[in-house]
Image (cartoon, rainbow, N blue to C red; front, side, top):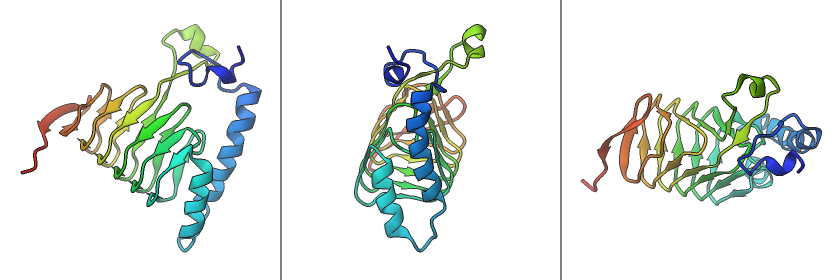
Amino acid sequence: MREYDKIHSGEEYLPDDEEIMKEQNVYLEMLYHFNNTKPSEAEKRKEMLSEMFAEIGEGCYIEPPFHANWGGHHCHFGKGIYANFNLTLVDDTHIYVGDHTMFAPNVTVATAAHPLSPSKRKVQTQYNKPVHIGKNCWFGTGAIVLPGITIGDNTIIGAGSVVTKDIPSNVVAFGNPCRVIKEITEE
């Protein structure tokens, strides 16, 4: 099996494989150009995101600089998503984000992980786990979401939180590690 075929399988692979790097660099070049657009080039940014992302819905806005291992190539964004400065998506495999979710500055969503074994880390293998984020979520400044996490609809993740386990819908959660603090009701 080629290293490239392991990217979305959850198996360990070598991310510096020549075939992987060649394709990844295409999207990193696009990301570079996106990050160097002028504030007045909103329409150009919108067009660029539609080329960079696997899926991106209407009305999405990402404020440069934006950082992503694959330039958004493995990201699936719903409609009306807002991301402030320095959104980092470690999109070595798929990241799914529901409609109307908001990211404050310096949020990181990671899908890549490395083995515990020192000998495997020495050769720099990694494996990837997808992240699923529901609709109408809000991530506070500096929040970090680790690989394989699922976050439900309407959930708020507080500033500086490190999300190490799944978080349900309709809650406020924060801390390190992030934990549910209270449920959200209509009141």
